[in-house]
Image 1 (tube, rainbow, N blue to C red):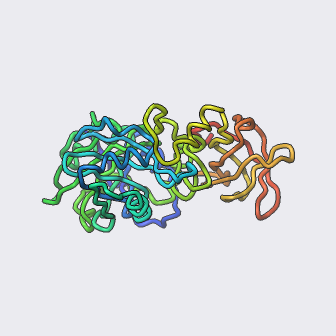
Image 2 (cartoon, one colour):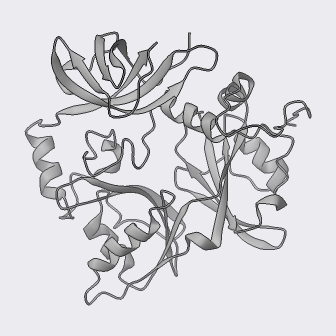
Image 3 (spheres, one colour):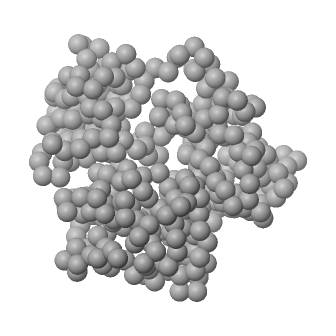
Length: 337
């Protein structure tokens, strides 16, 4: 049994609070994160999988009903529009995308529907979500939801009911060994009894993301970067047919033209996104995300660094709004000393 004392349960705290005990609960046991805004797009029609095959990076042709896979939606210049979890079933295919981005994803897909039998709907306002994260997440899900998520593959899911409402719990990428997302109707989050588990603030969730080296739309995933730079190689197939952005991705891979990659950055200065990373007077990259340390003034960050300079323990200069500051590149994931 999973036991959490009432002292561990979250009380009212500000969104920017980071509590070491809650971070360690996520790393070592389980914690939950409210995800009120998720992208939830429904596709129907006999050609829906064919359309996704032509527009995204991964090979989806072999997906069978009841299975899922991650893929990346790109511009024609191979820049990231979003990372999608494709959940394919017999009568419809659901796309889990970044919160606030479902409208753009829907519009992009519809641009390429010509004679195809495909209908695309943004269902994001109809749902909310709860994330379960940590090595004991399956145990918490079993005790609270009464379902077994322990054997789910990545992008696998279980359909179930909460308070009579149809829900879906999906395995998602994690910075804390295991993570799952429960999608439920809007307004039904209070029906899930998670009050005896640590509930992370937005700042705590962001801390885990940055320390774990996971990208986010608007930070590491933007139309300034391609999927190979963004560490999304495992979502790219080099054996499937053509898709939007495929020629650029293939050329980058074939000629080893990937110019930069994501690194961790550690600094005691007040650094911020878009600060320039400099080595020996040369601009070698940009900071993309920054969080404060749990118990110190140290800043931990993610940033894109030119490939030839992307080495852990390399000293860098950071050009900030307050002047130059020193920092060090770090391997991912990061942990505080």
